Image 1: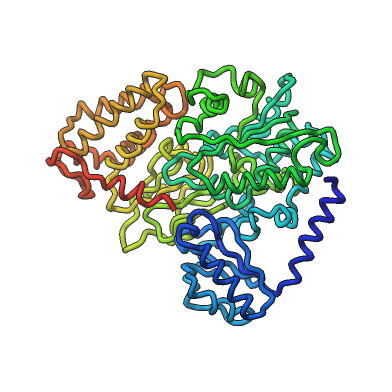
Image 2: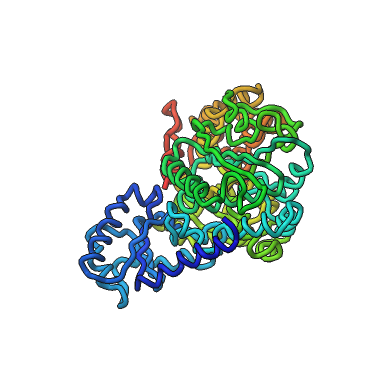
Length: 557
């Protein structure tokens, strides 16, 4: 497909829209599907047919506000409905062109105010299994421009100008990584998309893959052109069956349109992508463990250097970025690197997608400019803590992150600011906790996760996380001493400094941050034999499971 053919296809897809007076989009991401949004879509289609109105009912991906699912978006009025059921279909169709159905509008507007959609600009607006709808919204324009009008060096230059940093957690400058791989000589190079999203409370990558898979494919193809790769892999966990299904359809459609395969855009550029399924090992989110898994080996990390940029998949130079990073690439090339760098802060450019969960009024997926404060996200977009409870902490960065107290609510979101406060950006998990949460028990929950997910290859992580978990358990039981607390602190330092990969290196973070800001809760357990939150069953011989209830039970949307 050349530039003219792409423009023609986009025009044809856009011309179809005037045939309808209204478009009713139904969220059919995993969250809404679990609440039978497919039945809602079927009911709306039947009512539209009966009414005789020119109304197109469309399946879409995530619309963001998972707490209000199933969600429906009516265009062009941009009316959003939440908690829609089959029985509401007749009333919704009858209201088209008139006043919205008031009882189905649970004041959703506040959730979307302040957000800036770059990665999520198509989510909720296109059918993820129809490439024509993606192309109608400027899809693949950036790829065609790159391979027909730009040199690989010029593509990398725009990514560098944008200031985009890796959205997988490390925050490494994306343009610098691309440039490094491009300069390494090799007959074969690879591009890998890391979709192994394993953090408790995280569903950003899953939602992007379900809602706009072509966007990720286009980003990977542009990256391949920039570094000189001919083969790519999307590594996604098998627990995401809907994402895998939609990716499979998207790849087939891209090949049929000549946007993947040989001679892309009638040039000498060849590139294709395969899917590789992960078995759910958290450690495979680490790039060397992910590479081993793709190669058919046990997913364990290896020492670096050499880095994957030099010797990665099957010993070849390999570029690895996560889903959200690749999803930013096409709009950067369409609008220019300066456009992207105009958003955000001095060292953290663009926007960031977060999975907002936990003790919060409005859970869901948000995309905000870097620099927005935690208070604006939690109390503005998220609506604050429910049931009249008091905010206690927010945990960012998953098991690798930290818990920040109320005094940090006015902290501006950026890579450096979060690290300085004792947390990290991570891939974008954001779990809110209220005053019913015991911070010792929360630290124990995340340590148990890291202990369980450790691959066992290095002693500090394999043994250290077990020792830290046992010490935290002693504290929650009320049988620990100050010496135990000192041992816990020492172990955090040793495990963080000597572990082989990021899992062990960051496993102490939830403990360190809760010791930093909530040390009084640790001391209450040790000195007063009581849990300030009333969570730990001190004196019963085993801790309560409330950490699992208040954290894990709230995050899977």
